[in-house]
Amino acid sequence: MNDKTINKIILGDALEILLQIEDNSIDLVLTDPPYFLDKMDNKWNYKTVSNITKYCNVVKSLPPGMKFDKEQGMKLYEWFLEVSKQLYRILKPGGFFFSFSSPRLYHRLASAVDDAGFLIRDCFIWLYTQNQPKAMSLNHFIDKLNCDEKMRTELKEKLNGWKTPQIKSCFEPIVVAQKKCEKTFLDNMLKYNVGLLNTNVRIGEEMFPSNVIATDEINEDIDKYFLLPKPSKEEKGKFNTHRSVKPIAISEYIIKLATFSEDAIVLDPFAGSGTTPVAAKKLGRKFIGIDSNSEYVEIALKRLENAEKDKGCEICAEKLQFIPLEAKTDVFHKSRNCVFIK
Image 1 (cartoon, rainbow, N blue to C red):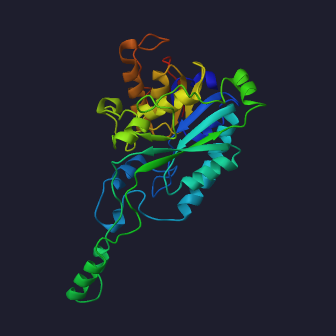
Image 2 (cartoon, one colour):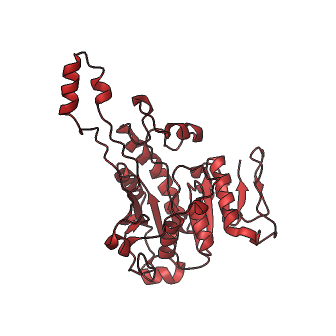
Image 3 (tube, rainbow, N blue to C red):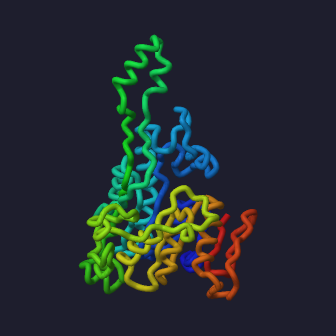
């Protein structure tokens, strides 16, 4: 199926589509999967998520990540284990798998990747300063206590500054895993063009690549060693309604680190608004993007179209177009970059 999917965005369930991809055919997997926080699991609805991410001040409408449920981690593990098994199958020997995660559930995601057969090589950290504190005061509950106003006031003063255990989160962990090489690293590299990391890549002020990445300017020392460009509004696109758009610079950094050949195929099974495919395209790599949300697929296609600008389709020399989502059968547009599988 790879020939039909290369340089395209596929609308469909990741597990179903992955089953159709050939063994040992992908050079790099780079993705940002659902984190299973509140309604953000693999079956979440786009409009529902958009509503719950509008921050409210009532307990029943907590933003994603605030409702604590121990089952979230187990469900994430079980689902991501199946995903990781398929990714292990389709990656070339020595191929790398990078996956964003959340601090609270990283251990479950990394365990799933480990148990699928991957070697856990590292943990990258995306460090930033701009985020919404999620800790909540208990004043709302104190006001409902069956006591007089004086006791409520005293209790509020006593617990002033003491909030629920969700402090400001300022990093995202990225699991770095690798499929086992055939024989030595050198043997594997010569046969498959994967398995080593490119230390010619630079970060910050021409520094050696590291496992810490920052896109916000923080201070002189951190910026010097870890800074990558912050995404602009133009990069995201005014039409982009995705709630968690990753910087193209991070995807480019990882793709440059982990892919050697210009024929390398970069797969993102949860492509969202298309950051990984756009980064791969900008670097001259091949890509496959998959997402179950039709709105996000259209956004990703638009971003790829913008990346092409006036270049048009390399095959049909036309502007990229969208396939009508109501199509009843498998439709492959003659343009490189769009395909919808029903």
